[in-house]
Length: 503
Image (cartoon, rainbow, N blue to C red; front, side, top):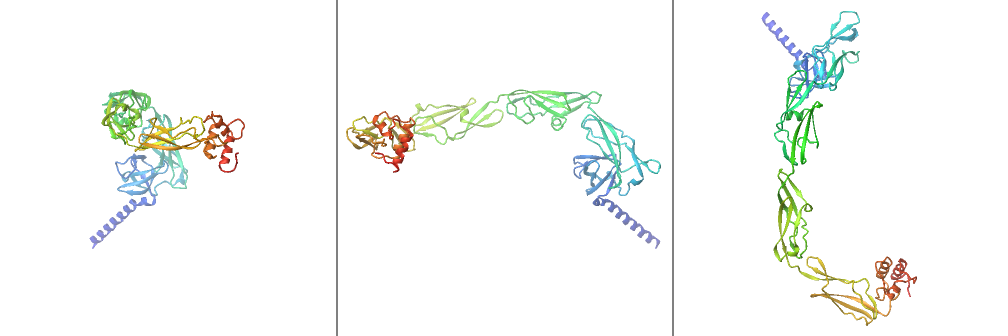
C-alpha cells in the first residue's frame, strides 16, 4: 500500500515538473523576460545556427521573448533596439527575478570588460563586466543582474561611451552607468600583391576578371600577416577598387593600359595591378537580313533598304553594324542585264558581297507637266520652255526625258489650240490659247478670270514669275498703278468668285 502511494506521489511530481517546464517554454507567448546566461550570444536573422548574425547580447542582460521555433526564441533587447533569434540554451526564464527598483539608489560598474580597446569595425566583447547596485538602506552593494547594455557603432577612431541601463519593469525608474571604450586605427603596415590575376591581357570590351588575385596585409604590431583572395577583395567592404577609367570587376574595359588601385581600410594602404586591353578586331561580317530589293531596272546606286548586318569580334562579341559605318563599292554604270552585278560592303577589314540583278523596266506611259502660262498673243512666239515630260514605268517610278516632240501649234491662228506631246509610242495633249490681246486679269489667256489667274499674279508679285511681255504685264497690273502686287491678285480672286467686275 505504501509503495503504491509513493508511486502515485512520484508520478504526480513528474507531471507537475513537466507542466512547469512546459509553462516556462511557452512563457514567450506573453512577452516574458529571459536572462542571458552566455558570455555573449549571437542574435540571428532566422531560427538556424547558420543564419546571419544581426547583433549580439551579453551575459546579465534581460531580453523579451515573443516567439519560439525549433529551440530558438525570438527576442528583443529593448535598450539597443536589437531583435532576432537566440538559441534557448543561452537564455534562462527570469520573469519576476529583477530587483525591486524602489530600494536601489544607483548602479555602478564594479569591473570593466576584459577588452576596452578595439580596432575600427571590430565586434565588441563585453565579457567580464561586473555591475553592482547601491541601496537606499545603506546595505552592502550587491551584484546586479538583468541590466541592458547599449554600445554605439565602433566605426570611427576615438572614444565611445557605452551605457549600462537597468529598469526592473516598465514605468519604474531607469538607472544608468557608463564606461568608455577606445577605437584605434588598425595597425596596418602594407598591402602587397602575392599573386596577380590569372588574366592581365584583354581585348577591349572584355570584362575585368580578378580571379587568381592574392593579396597580403602586414601589420606594425607584429601580428601574423593576413592573405585575401579575389573573392575576399570583392566581398569585403574594407576594400576599395579605383582606376584611371573607373574599372570594376565585370565591367567592359576600354582600349589601352589600365592601373587598378586596391586600397584596404585606408587610402594609403594600397597596391596596384596593371592590365592592358588591345583593340578588338573584326573576325567576320554577316548579312542577317537581305535588302528588300535586289532587282533593279535602272543603273543607279542601290539604296540597300532593309539590309541588316552584324560583325563578329575576336573578344567573342557580336554587334549590329549600320550601313553608314561601312564602305560600299558598287558601280551601277557597269551593270549588265541579268544577275552578277556585285556590290561589296566592307567593315573592319571584312567584307560581304551582294549579287544584284538588272532587269528591263517596263514603260506604261508619259506624264506632261505644262507651263503656268498657256496664253499667247497672236503673232508672238509660243514659249513652252517650262514644259516637262516624264516617262512613267510600271513600278511607279518617273524619269524626266528630253526625247519628245511637240506638234499642233500655229501662232498666227486665234483661239484654243490642242498641243500634242509624243514620246516613243505614248502621247499626251494640252490646250493653249492664241488671242488678240490680254484682258485685264486674264493672264492665262483662256478668256476667263479664274483662281489660277489670281495665283499667277501673286507669284509675279513676289518675283517667282517675271512677265517681260508688255501685254502680260498689262494683264497682270489690274489696278493700273504700274506695279504687279498682291492688290492685283486680290482683285483677280474677287473677280473669279463674282465679287468684282473687271472691264
